Image (cartoon, rainbow, N blue to C red; front, side, top):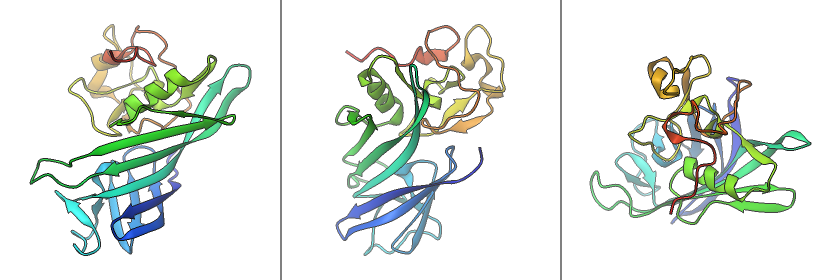
Length: 225
């Protein structure tokens, strides 16, 4: 479970485009090397140079993190298909990071696009998505009956703090905890670790109902009105 995955990807900005590799443990570690500079973070929208800020001529940096670029990568993702068991698929991801709008004010645009390919068809989240939680809910709602995402975001033993969360990661795993009547949030301080939404362990339990599933409810949730 602790093996680092090497995920092929691509980096594009005003200077051009190049193939890269994103290394991740599926939890909080993400590393890559772009134009000889080593970057690391817990989230793809917060990649920071390990040896201080890189040369301004090579990258655009906002509050210490890469911006004004397009990041593309693949993520292993499992789906359970009725009558076939659990199958391995790949989720194609693209994150467009805009330019800075001012000190500590963020970026002018941040768009996440995720695409799951299964049996010759594509299932994609809505245009303009900004986090993996919502994107995977949208993909699940588009999948055929009898096909379910088999990943931590769809697990009854996972939840976020109700104050909100960012693009990815920060999802609390409670596989070693015993939730009380209020679900996993009742045992928040006993969470095993934080994971990325697409991670999967052998104790996966589908969050099919609202019972003991924290404040998020079942997976997938009802679409927002």
